[in-house]
Image 1 (cartoon, rainbow, N blue to C red):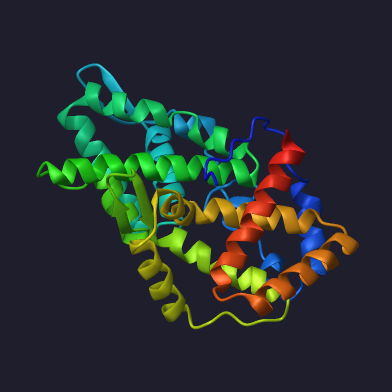
Image 2: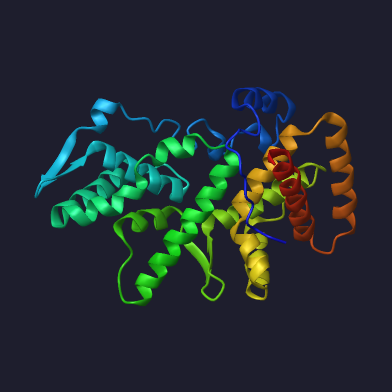
Length: 289
């Protein structure tokens, strides 16, 4: 079982406008009636992250022949919100922007070098489909937090960007030997998988706090593949959503029957939920190949 789902093509899995209309009718009253933020047109927690080109070119600070622009700040905030999974307050935006300006004034060349990988990030994310966005976000979160955790181990504080991100999406568990980081919204995504899968057969989700404790307790005894799967829960959630919304009526009825039988006989419903995730991954990746 692999948690690395590679989507080679940038072609959307479904038309976004059509999917929204279909979901509103077909999935009324279910989690699929509401878009996940990664399914929005922008692919970011804020519905609109566009910046006027003229405004983006506005210089907000200059030092030693280098220039920091409004575009640099907007890209940084958008990337941080992408990791956080939530739009920031105006105060948080101002705090992060000021931190970037301060870093630039202290060492302009180094600051611009650190911002260079973010250039064009909004455009690249917007061009991806929801599953690809989830994959990109998982990679970015893992890389960013592993770097920050290593810095903390060396006695350094979190970077200003990750300070803000961690308020919204902190690390819940870290398996250093496996290079796996479980963040809060990944755990929430696994619970959302439960809600979605159980909802197919009219079953209610167990108390969220109880389910979260059970998932974490199980993870403490799990191997690398299983904890990596838990950390990739948001990616699995987007795969399940893409798969279900693309099913025909007869195929969906068959899935409901399969899930009903599995849940009825399962000692651990999480195994059923994981199986649905694997099935969705195979189907969606197969369609994209």
